[in-house]
Length: 327
Image (cartoon, rainbow, N blue to C red; front, side, top):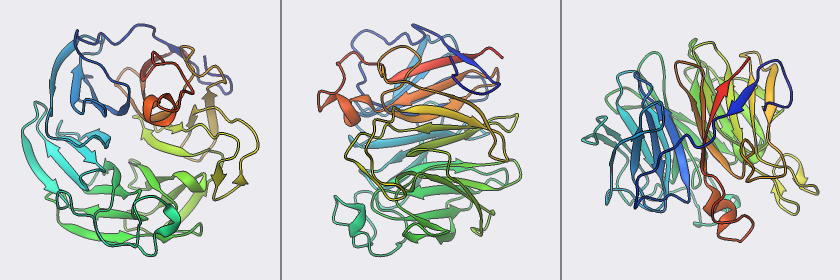
């Protein structure tokens, strides 16, 4: 299935066994816990759904809690579940069965950045937490790093108890600047990898926010997952002709969504995704991803938000796929 590189993955068809009466046109995030249980967070019927490794439904929770703009989900090493709700301007920490433990941010209250609610170009300055945050990563130290996001241009670092340690970022395309910091991961050595989506790059920082490097062999990166081998998995959105990249300007060709896998030095090891967006193994709108203890890869897609409501793909186009590593 992977079209370049030395690592290969094959799609696992029919993996998800969605219960009767459930649906999801958007799966905005996916994560796994210490037992390889798979947690997804959905958008149209906003909830968390939990499966076992074979795709059998275990439970759901969160109904009535989240807005229609859920965005990301992360499971920490202690199996705590962090849910990012960009419509509510909060990040919430739950037990695995949905009991609320901690809230970061003030529900319904965005920070002041100049954002007009529509355009990234309206963001005038970096602000405090949060204005439409996007994703969270747990560092080996236990610190929490949050990308913030659609209405801000910053990364925030918190202690495990939710105390703000520092923030960095301003609007722009220079080192340490962002146009939609969208996804985040922390490497075993503490380096912080940030998916700077509309700048078509991944920026890499020290644990305290010092700019170290950037990778530009990506397109619209949405989320990053670093597995136990140190492989860096990146989900990348579709660029359509006529859209504008802050790095490349107006896009003139169709660039399908894809997944790429790198080593920790940025060497490309695998990449796949083609123009038949709804074919098994290809992608419409890859938005989140994770890897379990057996090297299986899960990819979540916001298919309806990104393409379905505009009639660009049929209603039955996939929103969650599992891939088995085969080499």
